[in-house]
Length: 143
Image (cartoon, rainbow, N blue to C red; front, side, top):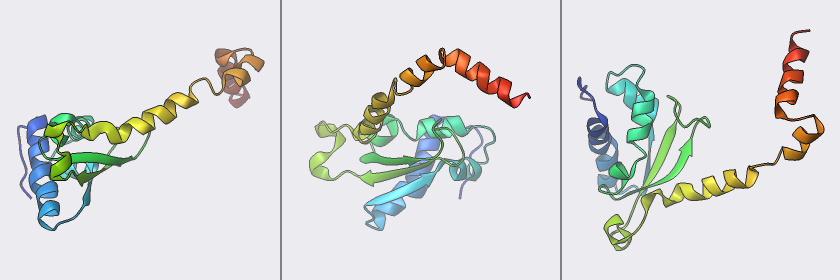
């Protein structure tokens, strides 16, 4: 695989398109996955994982290539060498040019996170507030 020197987001997206998306499409796969750490390594990059992760989840990568992001695995930060993006090809009838939002697959995840908002509100109230709970927890470790 080709190693690039001056890297920007467009070159990262181009690399993944040529080395992952196009071969998967040619093999008639419905889905394919990309591990961000592998891409970083293949491109000869170091400490640029946030750049890779960001470049591969934007509409600028998804829309023109007829892709939909269907799964993201890895740590909650979403920025790690272990992050794996799984894409599926959008068929011609539902192409991005006809109004499909390829990023829509991640919206249900945000809804679930929003439902968790305030879930510990009562627990923290009983402990005298979040700051107090954290202070008590830290104090218990220093003993």
